[in-house]
Image (cartoon, rainbow, N blue to C red; front, side, top):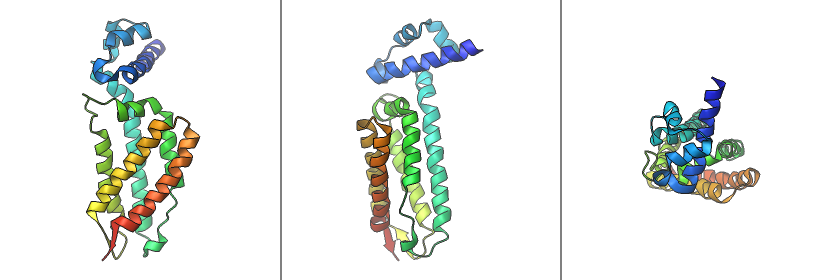
Amino acid sequence: MQDEKQTRQKLIECAKKEFLEKGYTKASLRSICADAGVTTGALYFFFENKEDLYAAIVDPPLNGLKSILYKHFKEDEAEISEINSIDDIDMDHTEISDKIVGYIYDNYDSFMLLITKTENTVYENVVDEFVSMLEKSIPLTMVNLKGYRIDEYMSHWMSHISMDAFIHVIKHEKDVNKAKARLRAILNYLVMGWVQLALIKE
């Protein structure tokens, strides 16, 4: 059983390298198996096909990140439901920013695949999915703020800006501590942007 777990993990690690170097379409299952020191038959014991292998790499961290975000939105929703003024919104999102960045960098290769190597996979629109998540969740959070409504255009724009900011730093900053420092400032700036640009006094 332990040998099977080790073989499966070795295939996943070799597949990460292959997908990152060549992309999904050009990645070779034969090359992955050769690097892992197993036969193609051994690969098919663990994975149905290339798509299943790719999913085994990206699905767990992707779903984990979604869970972190949903939990954060719920906490923000509860917090905002208890306040009466826009001035009482907590603009400091350092803790959640560090949590998100730390999680992404703990699974760095998988997230690099998701933002750079999804062509011809079911994950091609993953960035748009996160934009949609922000676009739906943040207005629901803010709707509890009495006397205000959401400007849908600005909310959509801010959702894209937020995703673009995270992706840019992740792609260009390999050091997790530097990434955390940059994204703390960026996220806190963006939170102020949401409040100032997307909330309209009724």
